[in-house]
Each structure stands twice: as C-alpha cells, then as structure tokens.
Image (tube, rainbow, N blue to C red; front, side, top):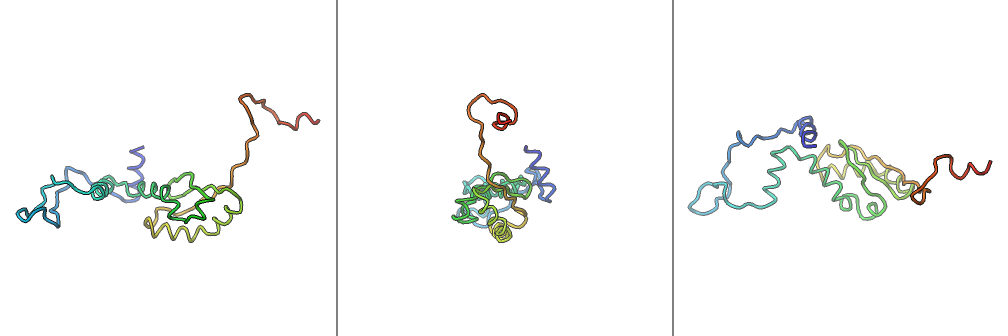
Length: 157
C-alpha cells in the first residue's frame, strides 16, 4: 500500500524529500534571546510536525482524500449529508451513495458546484469527479440456508 501511494505521489509530481540530504533551516522565531538559531531539539506544535511529515513523505493527496471522507458533512452541508454518504475514494473520484433516487438525481445536478467547493476547501485536483450511486436494493434472502434457482417464480408454472 505504501509503495502504491508513493508511486501515485510520484505520478502527480510530488517529490519525497530525503532526510539525509535535507538541511535544517533556522527557525524564524528564536527560542530565547541568547539563542540565534533553533537547535531542532525544542518541542514543536503537533500541526507543524504533522505538516512537515506529510510534505516530506509526499502524502498531501492521501491526506486530502481522508479529509473528504471525514469532513463530508462540513463540505457538502447538513441537508445533503443527511441523504448522501461517501463510500469510497479512488484516484480523484468520490463514490457517493444516496438514500433515494431523487437525492441521487439532485446530487448529479449539483456535482459541478460541489467540485468547485472541494477545490476551494481541499485544493485543486484532489476531487475531479463525483460518481453518484443509486440506493441499494433490498435483499430478499433470509436466514442461513438458501436455494439456488429462480426464486419464488419457479413454483407458479
């Protein structure tokens, strides 16, 4: 999985920075009045550490993918989120399942506006297509044992 994500990042042009060749740059804010440089040993905020890790490893798009799934309610709004849920995200396509055909049609019509909203919130090119899936049909199989065949029609002639 890691190699697949690295290949995808390389395909997008994101380059992984090697830790051996990377030089430490001085912090713009000195730690104390006597220290002119940051030694790299002082504690840092979790956001800056995580952001640097994501940038160094070339994971910016996979993190954005997780952001689409986890921030779905915020990105599309409460009304749409109540009826449509994301199921998967592959390449730059989000697959969304709606609870009725009316909401599936509505989401197809609003997909262009939603793509613009995703570009503003997540960055350009993270989501390029919304694939709307129809509601799942009910399953009529009940119990552990089932008989193969045509089902209830085969008794009528």
